[in-house]
Amino acid sequence: MNQYIHQLSPFALQFTETMGIRWYGLAYLMAFICAYAFIDYMAKTKRILLTRDQVSDFITYGAIGVLGGGRLGYALFYSPELLTHFSGQFPFWGVLEVHKGGMASHGGILGVLLACYIFGRRHKIPHMHLLDLTTIAGSLGFLFGRIANFINGELYGREAPADLSWAVKFPQEIYHWGANEVDKLMSLGPAAEVFGTNSATWADWINRYDQSAREQINHMKELIVSGTQAHNAALLDALAPVLTPRYPSQLIQCFLEGFLVFLVLIWVWRKPQKIGVLSGTFGFGYCLARIVGEAYRLPDYGIGYQWLGLTRGQWLSIAMAVVALAILIYSIRRPGQKIGGWAVAPELAGKK
Image (tube, rainbow, N blue to C red; front, side, top):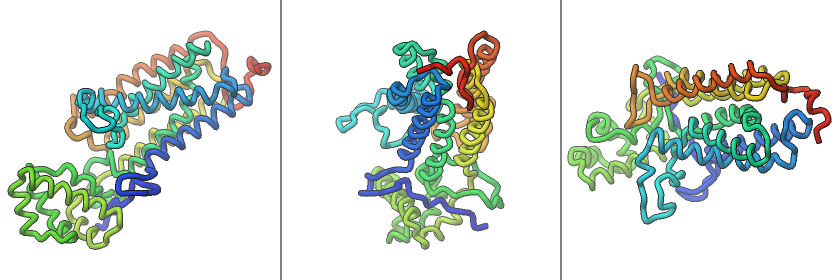
């Protein structure tokens, strides 16, 4: 079966081999634009406790929370060696090497929570109300972000049935083929020949697999992946029988974590709600969607499956879902005014 071989470039606009405007950056930009437009509209129509003058500052706090929390969360939850990795080259600290990838959505959520707490304390606004305001744009942020993950060919899915027509083959999986997977590396011989490396030379590199050979092999992997992004027909034909058909888990998670959660939030906020209801709904809905979506996603290399066969992302989601459900129940039961919704709340009708 001729399944699609991923061949999308991570660059929306490329200036040099390593520099350009990336789709991943545009995904974050779109999320921040949506956040600003939504919260500014809610402030303008007097549905929330923020004034329009405070919106831009709040978005700045939120952006710092997302980016800082997402990166620190990745280091803490998935790659702790980044915390102790220092080098003599800019940006000097492993945590700051964002150009190499690595963001954790759970960390981003915690970062936004902290940003809302700090901003709310400074401006005397309930931080849970501020967190409520981030949920609509947050769900859209996950939608844009997962699309960018798919374009980048990262966070791809587990092996799919060989006859699944909508499965995708990701060339990026070859980055993880090493000395213990000689057969897989050997199968890249026809792809290497596209770049002028004959089968005997390729086999010699693999059989030796010393430092010099590894450098050659890794360089060839880079050429192969970039060649697919250039739509090299001969290369795609050589890779077709080699790559593993996988679930496009990024798009599955895009639908579940982004679009579906967004629809739920829109429905819940069809009328004003008590402070914290939207945050609890978002947290529980996102975590439930993440647990389901991760059933199709390949665990991070070097981490793999954990207790009960679940991934680290699923366990983090289970823990966060418990907290979110508690927040939701508490927010529904406690007394307090209802804010937001798609009609002006009577309590805020006179708000300047």
